[in-house]
Amino acid sequence: MTVLTVELDEAVVNWLRRRAEREGVEPAVSAARLLEEASAEPDPLEFVASFDSDEVVARDADAFLAEHGFGQS
Image 1: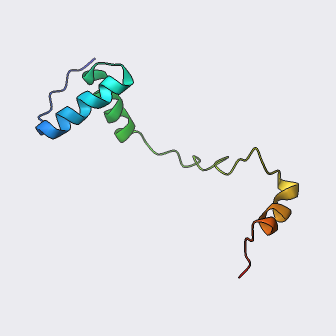
Image 2: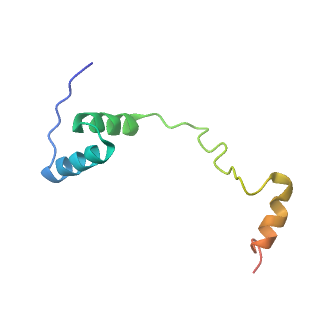
C-alpha cells in the first residue's frame, strides 16, 4: 500500500470527517473510497438494465405509457 499526503481546506477536512463518521469508518478509509470512486474508469455499459422495472413488463409498456399520458398533448 502507498501512503499519499494531501493538503485540504479545513472545510473539506470537516466534511470528510462527518462523512466518515456517518459511514462508521476512519476518515482515511472514507478518503480512499472517494479517490477510488473518482478515479474509476466509467463502465460504458452501465446503462444496461437501468430502465428495469418491477411494475412494468415489456408486453405491457404501451398500455402503461398510455395510462400515464406519455406522448399525449
